[in-house]
Each structure stands twice: as structure tokens, then as C-alpha cells.
Image (cartoon, rainbow, N blue to C red; front, side, top):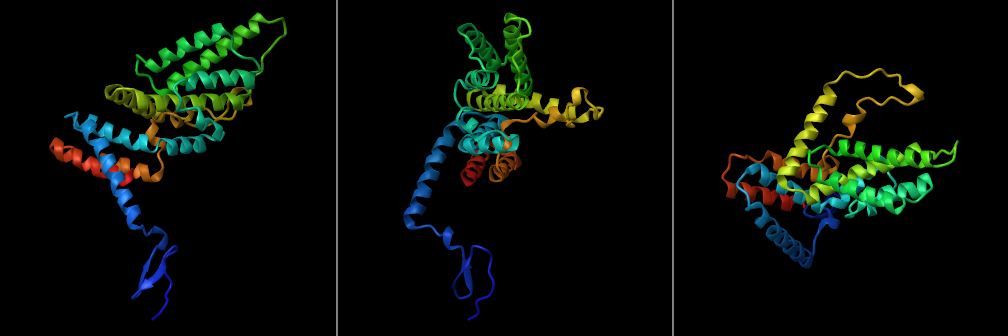
Length: 277
């Protein structure tokens, strides 16, 4: 018997066979895994069979995978955007935008919003999340940025001469980035299929437009660093931030033949969701 080299993580078993010992499941673990699959199958079947339009069925299946991996998506976004990990506890909350803006003013700017400013912010966020015009998350964050500076300008104008509230550029970047994530999560979890499809198409269209534009002059005023395609880099839907495994699952869902009859199409989607959930 020879003990030849074997793949990393694998160990000799018998008759020249190697296996990954850490991947071996007990019978109880196998039973629990099958029970979990049955639970997920039931969870998927009803919402997917509600529709006949294959685009809407596909959207529902994709949303399922994204919801099952929501915290991994948040972690990936925070890593890509270089945000403090503390934001992970805030962005998925119902009132995430109000919390993020309020904390920004309290900790970065140095004053707390008063009752009138809080009320104004609440009304603004309601309209922002309703998004009647189906604008991209990037566009809505630009609106939020204008609101932040509107409040700052009012504060500066109401104070004594030469009073000036300073703005920390990195804190502001983190605020806007975390707000964009909160908007993406809200769109994915709380909005109708038709809404999501329209916003997704608008995002794709805007991204394509930005990528088609010639690169701007590499010199910028005030010594600011020039970053090519800045807007395009942030024109993404939530699934862009999926990890590799979920990304493969989403691609598999997209690849399923939409010419199939509804029952077969749904069953194929369910099998992929169960594999990658």
C-alpha cells in the first residue's frame, strides 16, 4: 500500500481512496439537512407558483437567495466599500436612513438634529423610499446628500458671523455609502416585483450610459482625486454584492430555459435555490 500525495484537506481512507474527513456528516446531520431542504422547498413553492410570467418567477427565486444570504451580502458590501463593520447592525433596520443621518450629525458634525429637523428627515425618507419615479439607489443617495447639506447650510446661516460647521469627507462618504446599502436592502425586501424590475432596468440603463461616456479630464478642481467612472462604480443592484457561491446560484437561475412550461420552470428554479441556499 502506498501513501501518495492527496489534495489539501483530504486524508487516506481505504483501498487507495481519499476523502475529506471534515466534510463527512453524521446521520443526524444528514437528517437535519434534509429537513431543512424540505422546509425551504415549502417556503419557495407557494410564492413561485403564484405567477405565470417567467420574469417575475425568476425575480422571486433570486430574491429568495438574496434574503437567505442577506448578512453575507451586507458583509461583502461593507468590505468592498471599506465601511466600519458597525454599520452592519444598522443598514437592515426599518428606520436605517433616519438612524444613519442622525448619528452622522451627532458624531461627525457635532450637533443633534432638533425635533423639526427630525420631522423633516422622516418626511423626506418616506418619499425617498416610496420612489414614485423608480430612480436608482445612486440617484436617491444624491438627493439625500443634498438634504444633509441643506440642513448644514441652515445651521451655518442661523449662527453668529464666522461660525462654520466643518464636514469630514470620509465620514460623509461612509454615510452616503451606508445609506445606499440601506436603500438597496429596502428595495429588495419591501417592494413589489414590478417596482424592482423597473428600478433594475433603470439602473442597468444608467450604468450603460455612464460606461459609454468618454473619460473626463483627469485634473479636478480643489486638488480632489480623479476616479474614473465614479458614478458607474456605484450603479449596482443588491445582487452585485453576492459572494461567489450565491453569484453562481444567481447565474444558474438566469441560465434556466424560460421556454419551459411554468411547472417545470418553477421546479428547476427550486432545485437551484436549494442547492445554493
